[in-house]
Length: 367
Image (cartoon, rainbow, N blue to C red):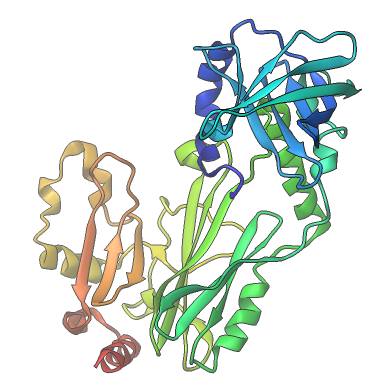
C-alpha cells in the first residue's frame, strides 16, 4: 500500500478521529473549484468527519482531517491547513495556509458538484470515480541488491512483484514467472477499486493493501524473494507473508524444507493468497531436536504463556541467510518467538542427500 503506509491499522484510529472532529460543521458532498489558481476537487464525509482533495492535474488524493486542538482541516503530514467558512448555498470559500517554510495564504473557492454520495461523499462516482483510471503496470527505479545485481519494483492495481537484473542466465525465465504474479482479471481490478472507494467513503482516504516483494537472498546459485501483505484496516491480523526460492542453475522453484525431509504445514501458518510460497511450516521431529540442542533450548522449561511456541506443530519461516539457515517464528510482541540460525557447514547431520548437495553449492559459491 503506497498511498498511506500506516493504513493497515486505520480502523484503530477511527474512534479517536471521530472524537477529535467533535461537532464541527462538515460541508458534506463533492466540491469543485480552485485552491489559489489550481483546479481541484474536494470531498467531505459527514458520517465520520473526514475528506480529501486532489489537483485535477495530478489526481492524487490528499487526505483532510480534523484534530481536537483547532478548527482547521489538516492535510496529511500537515503540509497545509484549510480554514473554511460556512457554506453559502452551493458555494464554499476559505483559505489555505502553509505550515512549513515561508508563510503562504491562498484562497479556496468551491462549488457543490455532487451531493448524491450523502454522508459518504468521498466514495461516490463524483469523487472516487474521477480518481479511477484503468490500471497499468508501473515500473519503479532500479535498486541495487549487491554489486552487479539489481531489481525494479513492478506494481499493478495494488499488487507488487519485481524484475531482476544480474549475471545469471535463468533470470529471464524467472522474470517471466514473476510477471505472472499479477492478477489482471476484471474481478480483481473491481475489488481493488471497491476497497479504495470503501475507505474513501469511511475516512476520505483511498487506502490499499500494502503489498511488497523483495529479494532476501541472492547468490550465483540461489535466489529467495519475500512477499509481504498488510491488508488495509486489518491491524496486525491483516499481515501475511511467504517466501519463494529458486535454483539459479535450473531457473526452477525449490522448497528448502525438502533439504531436511518432508515438512508439515503448521496450523499457525500465516494466510497466503493466490500465490503460495515455500518458506513456512513445522519442523520434522529430528530437525526440531537438532535445532533445540544447537540453541540450548529445553522445551520442558518453557513459560506457560509461551508453551505453544515450543510445540511440534509450531510455525517457522525457513530462510537462507549470508552465513547460515534461519528458522524463525513470527513476532507478535510477546517475546515468545524462537529464532535459530545455524551455519551452513553445521547442518550436515539433518540434511538429506539433496540438501547436502544444495548446501555444498552454497558453501562453494561463497569461497
